[in-house]
Length: 68
Image (cartoon, rainbow, N blue to C red; front, side, top):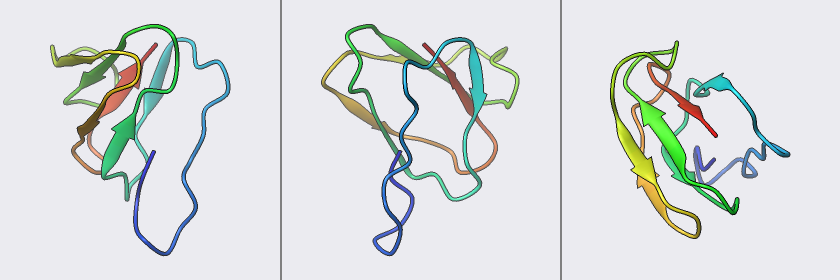
């Protein structure tokens, strides 16, 4: 997860289930071998988009979530 140029990337080792996005999240990079779903709410309920392995997407800071 990319937040700002002044912070290291946030890594999630083998993410499973729903994860709330960090408050300063900006870009999600999918470095897994499975699709990752991005949601517009912190509970993985609101339909969102799917990020395929090796791709990335801008995310809504602090208000969204993702699941793998």
